Amino acid sequence: MSFPAKVLLAASVSALAAAAPAAAADTAPPTVPVAHIFKFTSPSVTTTGAPPQPLIRVDHKAADSVTARLVLTPTTKAGKVKRSAKRISVNLGSFGTNQVVGPAWPANLKLKTGYYSVKLNATAADGSKLARPAGAAGQAKLKVAKGVVISPTPASGPIGARMVALAQAEIGVVEIPKGSNDAPRIATYRTATPGGLVGAWCAYFTSWLASTAGSPVGDRGQGYGRVDDLYAWAQRTGKALPAAGVPIAPGDFMVWDEHIGVVESVGADGTITTIDGNYLDAVTRRVLPADRRGGVLGYVRL
Image (cartoon, rainbow, N blue to C red; front, side, top):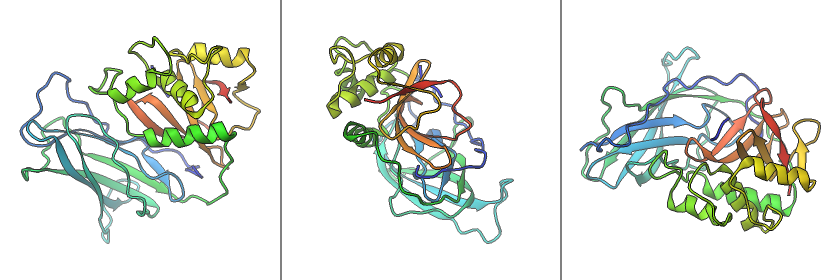
């Protein structure tokens, strides 16, 4: 089970306006592209933080891939389109159909502060355009706040830096099919825990990060499939840090009851960016404001 940089938002996080219902797993894909999921992993970002990370699913019966873009329209806080608004088109390239994906945001695209209404458009190879029948999503809201550039917090050590780099390369890996706790790449994460069975995989992901970075977890380096077991090992071996009172750094594991992720960056305002396996059924980047860390049991530093 999963739950609940650079400098991110100090103001309150606005709620995602268009929470997208997923299509039933046993429903056949349509003959035209249909957006069944579209939302941001965080509906708020800053000008100096990590870029927006969209999560998208476009279903199509005959096409293996679609070409998609987002259209961002500046709005007021209340959601009213500004008279002088200039729409921004964000090309997401091509990606596979019938599964949740996290297309990369263009590295050179920077957004100004403010509020945006965001619409998803997609086209299949045969020219068919994205359709939105009743119940299908395709729009969301995004808030961009001004950030302040600061020197990044150093990683917790060479192992920590390697784990962060490894985790960043995995962002966007998703379960196939959604809700299955499995996929070819997720099966690779389980290889760090011999005998690991298909199931909740956030601990498998962190065990794989540690093993691949050269510092496997466990008394015999065997990895763990359960968060409780991994954290108990860290406490037993002096690798656990308390939930408060000790500065944390990129490369530390952040531990909740039955969930774990790796810290990617720490902001001067107390925000923490993590990369989590099995969050929204994917490897996902999350931004946690300083006042939203309830339930954190502690940290693990290898």
